Length: 357
Image 1 (cartoon, rainbow, N blue to C red):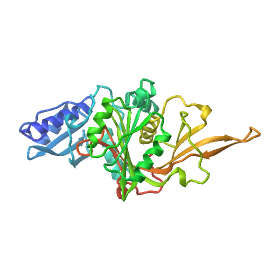
Image 2 (tube, helix red, strand yellow):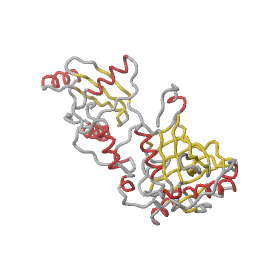
Image 3 (cartoon, rainbow, N blue to C red):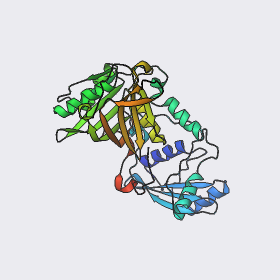
Image 4 (spheres, one colour):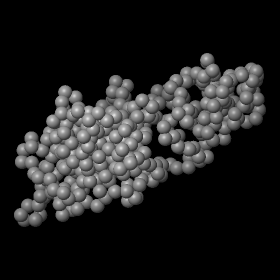
């Protein structure tokens, strides 16, 4: 770090030390940086990181690859320590997998290779094993291990209008073991606490704009995550031509075309709303179909033709489309919560062939 660094800079050094295997911290004091480089080379270090500070806080970092370079200087922004992150986990001593994403230019390739050189070659998990390990230990694991039974609470914006209530009742028809709660003026964080205390496993909050549903918050309980989706193209059951009547049978759930790590998380969140064992005698099917990051919701029943060799789909409604806006760790907390993913359209939607789910 800089000579005579303050407490916050030391703290940042220890955080980096946790992340980077085979790393050591050196108190520089008044030693010139060129002399530090020579000493590091003589002791066979392969990389040198120097933390700069301004106003007693880390504000920059020098990466120097040894013994011949190159050297790069980066500005540090939006620094958040582990203890300030909600529901932060404990680090282990295993070698991490390194993901270097979206370094597309010649300069980007050089920077990515510099970052890669900081970490050992043999991560503890690789490829599909990483996903399997994450899914076995994520917030949805208890549901997929059949340790919990879904119990869903559906609520809405304070003083919601008739159309929003109608949408809540339509969702209530689709999701077994769900209940509707009139929120009135109760703060959402208090609703989350009440839902956890009453053993609900999921919370759905319908937002409205101009007296119509325009968004939905999915909050998996008790530990999150929380996601917000924009609602488009909503069509109620009565507006669908030849719409059928729903039954109380547990539906089969179809999750289609969720291919990325983020997509897997969203698909698992949807799956947690429904009981494990569908009753196939009811022939009900709930489909979440992802196409170009738009999630199409459909609710059908299989119908068999008289000859018994062909089947058709009879739509039960409702029908709508979801667009993921953000995903947050933990339960609802837009002020202090840690966002895993946020849609920034003008920055992220640079190519028609790039999709996130």
